[in-house]
Length: 314
Image (cartoon, one colour):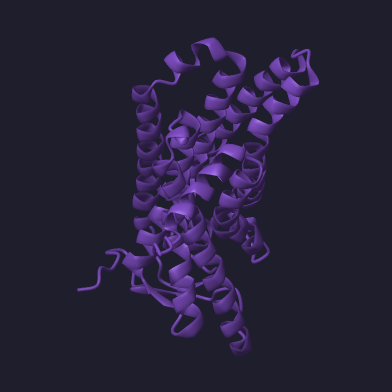
């Protein structure tokens, strides 16, 4: 039996999506299906290359493989639902909506924490290279990944449970292509005061803390790099951080635009920014990390070389 909120008469929601015009549905379906396939294939190749190449058995690539796996799961939480909406009904059950929202926040914040962990890895590698092997031991790397995955799930569970306490007795039309916290709270016919207070305090801490950690790490990295006497040494240091900084800028720039604003100001214009951090960044991450990384490009070449069929002996 379909689960219904005990304090609400709403059993399902309607996701309006990106466009209500029938002629837009098929082009949007093709566009997002293409982006989804590129995301899955690109991140899967990164994972396989890291797993198969002994030269990539380092903490940096260990974290990158988990980031790629999280991106696959994150995109899968969102895009297949969008594809269904483009071609058929736009309804989603109450339980399905809260489930999607839970995984969006859990996986999105896992991405955020992993980016902070990767910044810490670069900080230790550049600012304290003699103790890098000791500090970034396999046990500590596994612990950092475990914390990066578990804390966001607790954060997401808190907001999902609080949202489940609200009444939805009027409109069930969500002006979005996914079940996000702000559009859902705008539909509630009960007070969202507690929800907004928790978002302002706990939500801001979870969102901003990893970013501040990244900013601190790169401030220290910049100070260290500027003290390197040789130009070649500076270029090498910057090349190891350039890809990560690009991903951080893309991810946090869009996510801050969406979430660091009051719920009442959330509008349809935020859809494009949401697409950037939910779909576009996950698709671009494999390209960003591989284009400027010689070791990873070499690992991908080895992987593709092993996949080629061998010629039969004459």
